[in-house]
Image 1: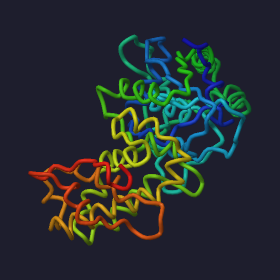
Image 2: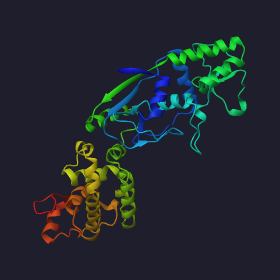
Image 3: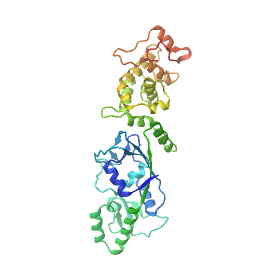
Image 4: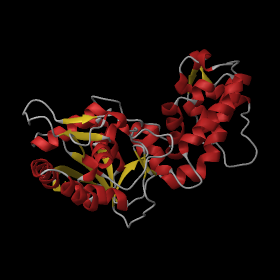
Length: 353
């Protein structure tokens, strides 16, 4: 367990670029009710879960936006803490208390407009935190949480209200400035371990999207694996194989088989970004060649006609080439590629087996 963070520290680290949301994370999905419940839990000292950070020295493709907010383009020295778990909580806390970023045009920041109802008595069960549309805000009874860490506006507010109200707000300020956010930091450059951790923490929710995870590892300014797969799907669509192009798991297995000679999950997560980028033209040729072979030699004119889609994996390895000229199997190679009942196999006389 790492040292806990105070709320101002979390906001500063996000603004400085020390804490980032990796691109394989899903977007912000909480509504205002869940955000206000989180504020109530922090205020009352109830458990609300910890933040899990993955600390690494290797840069990943990360999101410049946190919820509806475009983050400053600050690029600190590595290591960086990428949020593996607790993105919704971290985004909620940042969104409610940050006070200088405007939402991206067209983005909705209303879930973060949380107010404390000063007119209600504190209750262990009921919450004084609520979302209120702008037109329904009553300044005499609704205190905006975003003022707590905006020192000039906060001091001005205290001078403008009765002493009793100022005391309530000051108590609110003390609660949130003293609140400590539990943090766990997982420090590793072992991608297999990271994939396992991410899969386990998402097991009860959405399963790990290996494509998104690998995209973060292989990304560069001029290469995005998800974009490359999308282009491949569009290339294959006129030939009845769009389903193959949209099957990211199958395509990742083809990549691993072509590069490592192994299509296992462990081989996929250990693919090296630089090698995927440099060899992607070869991968593209392999997959396109496999589809062309299925159409011309096997008379399979759609993905639905395949006995099983993994047929594409060894075929892609066979047709993958760095040469400008595509691979064309001779008669013997065609026989060896296709063994009884549609079973495909690697043979010694295949070019890339």
